[in-house]
Image 1 (cartoon, helix red, strand yellow):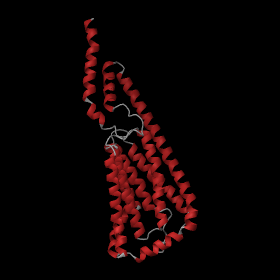
Image 2 (image 1 turned 30 degrees about the vertical axis):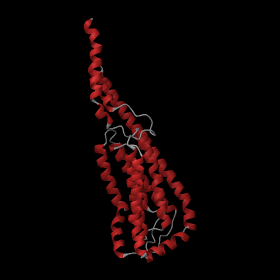
Image 3 (image 1 turned 135 degrees about the vertical axis):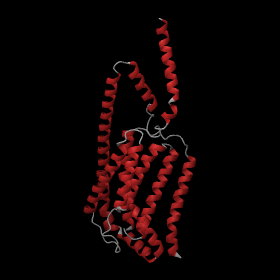
Length: 316
């Protein structure tokens, strides 16, 4: 009976995450989540209309357009520098935090890990372990890198502006995670459980799932939603993926229990600076789709204003 209680922990955990997500989403308004990001920028439709009017109404329109392109390139270069600085700095800070936690984990956490390992090993169900071996591949290195590459390509094409930002953020996250984690594994040498003595601190699968699924979910939320409900749903989806990966690694005894928890913490520490960097470079979320709906109004008002401005001149 206890074996199946351990099996039931996976759907019960997912159901709890789903219920909490639904309740939080229903209590939250569906308005764009721009309160924490500051005032929204000028809509793109208004900017485009102003640029067209300037090109048509002034003889130096082409010069102004070239200047605008140069300014855009300068902003993109500055944004790339900010992204690299914040993402790399977050990787260094995350490494130092996890390295400081390593010695206490190595010296004191076997008292927690060994009883959990023995209980899990004695209550495994063969057919359920076979199912989890397939689910467990989500957090593997090459699976993660392939998914990140596909997401970077798709987001780079569909991103409304600054199309370099999603591929750059995901690519930099790959580099930071790879080298910081490699350094951690060399700094903190901890043997894994008997079934996987080369297990590492912190667990890499949960770390990768939190970092990359969280960053992809954030980029998708910025592009397609930007609302508070969308943010809650994206957070719930990432939490479900992270729980599933952590449960699979623990059930299959690939890592110690504390190492799995440290992997979740490590992924969260890496994710935070990248989200902050994207927000700093791209600006407020949830305003990309609004200008398309607001385009007809500025065109009409601009035409009327042009007519009113030309009327006295014609009369003279």
